Image (cartoon, rainbow, N blue to C red; front, side):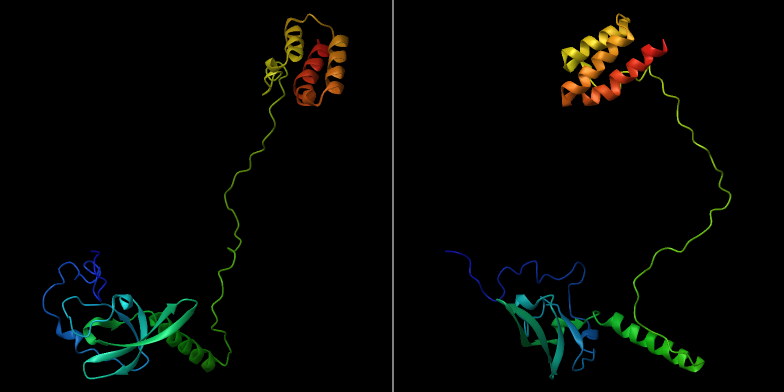
Length: 221
């Protein structure tokens, strides 16, 4: 037989009391004042079995729509399919607490009223709208030392091969071996370079990076 799906099924950890918060309910919970329109958080107290809401409403935020002798009427939004329904439930005061979701808005209202009163006393009109943060302001760099950077002289002997692996083709391998041993003249090197440039597209990069520097090296010699 499968496990039952009662009202409090699978709530062993959900309704558990916090660490070192067990014991009798403090008196301050019963001395709170709730008014219609206040925002409250539904937080189930596992030690109080009466007036306990369904596990779906645990952790939800709603507004007070009714206040009775021992319970609070809370209106909570619930999504059912493709629509949102306003559910009205009654829970005991032990299972609700004042919400802080509206705290920042109330503080901002007080701050804006104060700014408007000060501006009115000065005879000014200000805007209390929140503006996005703009770019950083400009500044002057003081005490900076300038350094002129010059390029390193080109060394054809050390940079003749470059980053190209010329051993991939027998043609480039032969050209490179002859250039290294100085067994060819400048005219032959130029002829091979032109033939390499015009024959295949695969030799364009070796032509610019290997053969032309080698030809210039032989001409200078």
